[in-house]
Length: 350
Image 1: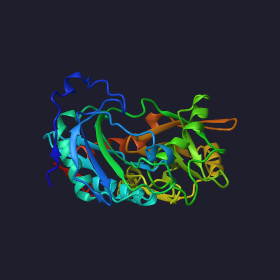
Image 2: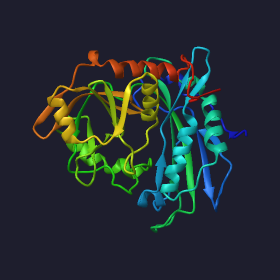
Image 3: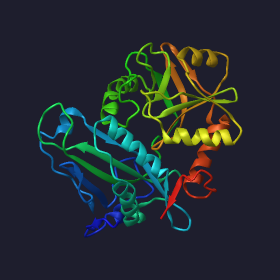
Image 4: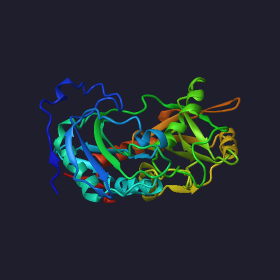
């Protein structure tokens, strides 16, 4: 399916310094837009990236019926565009849509549209170390009437942006034991906008004490570790890769899933289970916490250098000693750029 395209009169590409790509601030020339009106998806269009006009009564502004995805595209040495786990991102966005009472997005709009959009702006894909073209699909309710009910109309926008590293230094994280990111039965497993808005205040409090991010704990006892900021979290205890088992208050991260697949194939012992604050503190005191890192599409692998809990500041081993996360970072980046055999069928090339 070919999507109607209106090209920019003049590209902004010559203005971009590809040696300085702050995350999420530089946008490519075009975006895809599609509207869901009166029970049906209307034909999508690819248009110049620009502001949109909305009514003050836009339902998404009042009741947070909004979801998004985070994806990346790369370019290999042959100049081919490579998408990493595109179908899985598509499926997860529709899982989020279902949870937020929103219409499923057709495959031909999301997947085929993304291919056409990125192909059009392929010159925007950076090829430096740690760089990629970040893809941000977002869908929100677009009724212009205030009322606590599912909207009848929705807008999907897919924008792209060349980016460098999300985090520029190893992280200091604080174990959060008062506020919760999500609760069992809530929207934590969906990429719903409200999940992230609600996380900002406790993150701000942690930042005031010198911490970059939080280690979220469960909403009942504040004891079971769930995620790190907006990422899944992993630990290496002795020689075992350990990560909290998924449940309804946690996002099923695709980077998380990728790392678990690869680690098992490397022959590493992997455990998906409950990880408690008590266990983490005890293993730290015993010298058994070898590595800790967040994992996600934007951050890829983000080393955790320090973990704070009450009066205890846990300084973890230096990055030079972290054999697993460093090896996995290099392996994943090479995989996404098509430099390794695609044993899992995760890559789509155009």
